[in-house]
Amino acid sequence: MINYGHFIGGKSFTGDENRYGHVLQPMDGTVRARVALASTKDVQAAVESAKAAQPAWAATNPQRRARVLMKFLQLVERHNDELAEILAREHGKTIADAKGDILRGVEVVEFSIGAPHLLKGEFTDNAGPGIDLYSMRQPLGVVAGITPFNFPAMIPLWKAGPAIASGNAFILKPSERAPGVPLRLAELFFEAGLPAGIFNVINGDKEAVDAILDHHDIKAIGFVGSTPIAKYIYSRGTLNGKRVHCFGGAKNHLVVMPDADMDQVTNALIGAGYGSAGERCMAVSVAVPVGEDTANELMKRLVPKVEQLKIGPSTDSTADYGPLVTRDHLEKVLSYVSFGLEEGAELAVDGRGFKMQGYEKGFYLGGCLFDRVKPDMRIYKDEIFGPVLSVVRTTKYEDALALCNDHEYGNGVSIFTRDGDAARDFASKVQVGMVGINVPIPVPLAYYTFGGWKASSFGDLNQHGPDAFRFYTKTKTVTSRWPSGVKEGASFVMPTMS
Ligand code: NAD
Image (cartoon, rainbow, N blue to C red):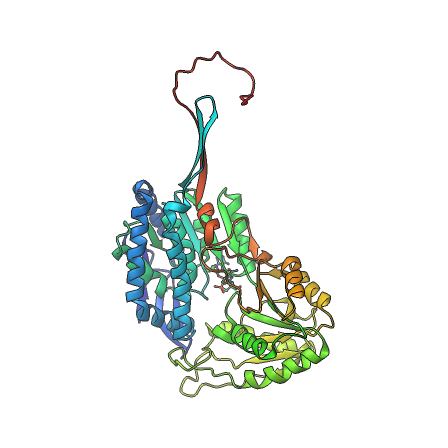
């Protein structure tokens, strides 16, 4: 069995051996690894190492910092197959999907290579007599990222790329359910020439998280995970005076207008609803057809496609999606299927009987499709995070828009239509952070920012894009007078340029 520890100061670190968890292999239900769960003392060791290394890294010019990231990217490319295999084995997603997970993280590191440009300040010549005014962006010091199980490569890199490129030292607390890739990324950063202590990995649970939240020397925390934990981290972290932004859960709607291309809609819903077993924060979990005819046509097309989904072990390159992450999570998703039935929704496709031959202990669930779901049902209100799609029928566009706006979550949303007026109105009025027009998963590219609204996000500034550089730096403004010898008497009024 693999034994995962931590990565501190450029090497693996065992730490407190009394607390540990198990990392499962979802495709066959076996235990793949033992993972150390850090104590407060272990977190302290990571902070000390990060704090000692950070000033020299901040003093390294941004171009040289960027070169280390370039070297890191070459190593990630060289080890792409190995990383994808670890990721698929611990998460359950297919290898092809795991490569997408890595690539979306890589793109943010590529963007971060632009640090010399992104960190530039502003300058005003002659703001007053002999006075120049300028601003600069400086790193915060030691910063941390706390990340979820569902993107073990992408989200750690979304945090680490901008943080490191800005001159901070970074402590990652990844999900204890999939720690293999984050640890491997730490080794690759070090191999690429990143100084010891600049990228550290602390594996752990609530104890490690609380130690991060309470540590005086950690200046900022970027969190991604479920909404209840996001709220907790935001409130405790900000109470402790830290800069915190937290990205939480989601319930993403896809509105189907009567004029939409129904082939395109069906494929979009199948891919975005069931890809990665629905374990994506941008997965579409609610289809909202406008009009009875649209709904009937949609169901006619969706049902056979859901029934034909190919579910397989993560190593099967022909599978559409793999198992769920753990048995507990599978049980939770199954309980939602039962709630839906109890509350009166119509289960048009029931995937509960699915068995994967040769992998009977894996955490598989066939695609489930609910029709005639109502807004007061739990399967509509809650994030299920599984291969379960709900269809909520509406009669007109305004009702579909109101449905999206009234939902507690506001991460992603899409509209499928050929009508430019409707699309434009929707993009303008919908109360959701990321909008797709004839695009089912509108994850912005690395040079834009990523973030939801309402209960999907807490705090200011989004992830990646220019916001990430603002989040991981503080601005200093300097007012200077040269030549310094301008003679002036003491002034007791507020300085102005009049
Ligand atoms: P999670 O909230 O269970 O865990 C996230 C992190 O918080 C992990 O590192 C975990 O160890 C830690 N954690 C868990 N319980 C804790 C507690 N009681 N106290 C302190 N720390 C705790 O989330 P998950 O199940 O790993 O990931 C799935 C969730 O993440 C979904 O809700 C999904 O929508 C969300 N997500 C959101 C985004 C986004 O950008 N909005 C992206 C990906 C995933």
